[in-house]
Image (tube, rainbow, N blue to C red; front, side, top):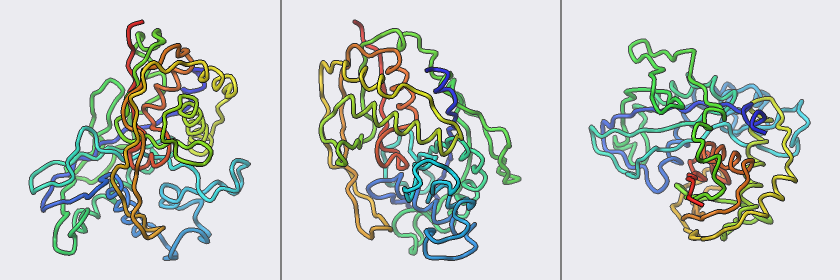
Length: 327
């Protein structure tokens, strides 16, 4: 199974922004940044100026359409009835909880680009550059939200960063470090220990019976991970994962939850331009101790921790860590 998971590949990009005026990113900063980035990219590349992408003849080849309104391929056999498929990216802010920034403060925006989305880094960088004067967050018309893009770095699997953007020439390097599942398996202790601590970093929004699950169930988590990995592989890596889905779900049912310290948190709100209303991004927050986790499930958990799981992953939700515990 490990060789199957190694077909997935992604890059982790960190954008360094220096505030030039007061920036207020409101309740869910990743959502604000994602929305602004998408709007900027659409202004750059849209040639039809249609109000939405639904009836656009170029929706399958458009850079904005692929990243932000991702449709299933008209030639593909998978999920044709779906209007959209999982987006090939995640926007998140590593280690930062501030929502407001005064001039001179630094804001780091981290973006995961999965599969073919890695090729669109120059477009995203240019879209961000064009936001320098338009601004981010509240009060843009009053001059707030201005920033300067100071760096673009790629995070490597060993924890180091390498610059991928030449600010003087405003040019992105062609070679960007790639992550694969095999890069995550260095921690032998993790993969030899069947007792794990799972702790959420951002709200976990899992669905069971078409509703958000307000209690943690390990089988639902594994099913969500399998669904996400399979969809990402199919639509964005042009491959199909040949996994024993039924067998893995049976293994999940055998895992014991020793301690469950998960609780539902209503979470911050974000504005949905599509629904024209504010939506509360609630989810499960806390930690659980798991026992009798098979090596195959540990592998899935490790990959899910990197690529996020559940709903609203594009805004950084569904992120968690796993750590081995003594038997």
